[in-house]
Length: 189
Image: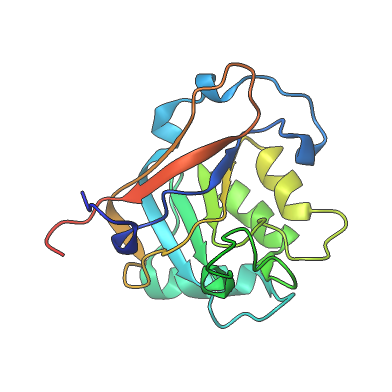
């Protein structure tokens, strides 16, 4: 396991189970009830750094990624690396949210069909800035796919992280979201 965040995903982020207020549904369980096997395991990192402000990651781009690197499998975790964490002002890590790219609604539905367990991104939210309907949030959270946002230092060199991604929220009884400690385990680096 790496000792610094530059080798894996970030120590910061937030995990949102179904029922987070953004999804518009009631909280059915707290972060203390999330099954850990949903938050630990094989992860795919989609390099989407070619997308600009307001652009959407669409189904065609995900399918092209699968053609090159292999299919997403049920239970995978999907990390989307837009490179937006590099735009955050160093003094204020929550910045960099204006005009960010995001996951398109149809792409989110595609990941739901693939039965992924979690989607993470290095932007403030999984939807693009300016989205009024938040289709990715609704598609993912409404289908029990966890969302981890505000990741940084996602590994650019691993299409699939062979060793586990670990994304652990605080155990908050009745809590619909939490800060997350997220790491990837890498050997020999």
